[in-house]
Length: 286
Image (tube, rainbow, N blue to C red; front, side, top):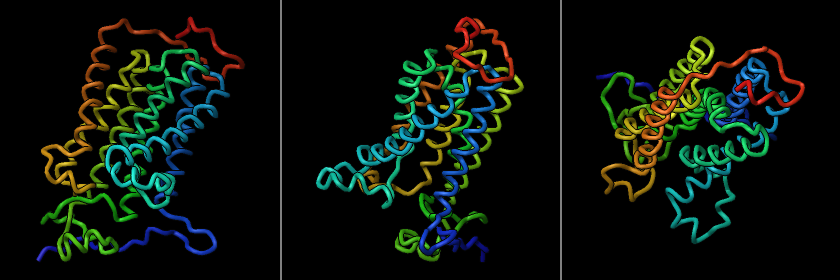
């Protein structure tokens, strides 16, 4: 008999007057470390320090609002349409990464128009390095919540999520794919690749290249892993490609187009003063 992994970790780190959950901690660590990564990049390139705080606000708001609305409209609109007030009940769960991605894209475009006055690609190529790390940490948060796991497996690293009602209803006594770990490992590997591209290969001198690699590195694994995930909503049972896969395809194609765009255009030559600018830097340095 195979010795599978029994996952019986509480989603709560501390419960009392204040409840602290692993998911929230992973989310917070991701944003804090991500902020420091982007700050180092901005300083490396001589961007104004004040841009950082503004960007953080744009991204945090876009992530939360976009991920929530993505779940509402992409997955369970029929339910929320009947009771729109429940859209605000974010503590009950229900976030969609594709919705967060779309919202962040819109937020960065607005940020570029009103704050940096630069091409949105400039911000995207720095921001997505940190987002890859955040994505991996959020998937670890899903693991601690015993949610978003896969179908049954007899592989030796299969998990039995004994704290999950869904696991008991669908797979009682069977191990399932820990798809949260699969995705987290892909995103952490992508984070390492993007850091290497930026700091060792000066990939930021080809606008759009880092963003293109990011889109493929995030959404191609997501597309493939979805084949062994459980359906998130009942209507996915009759679909050849589920909602997550359908939403991933445009981002994968966009990633390919961005890489082609970045490679056929002349390479830019940037200066790196390694200090924050006291005022908005000269746009001719881009």
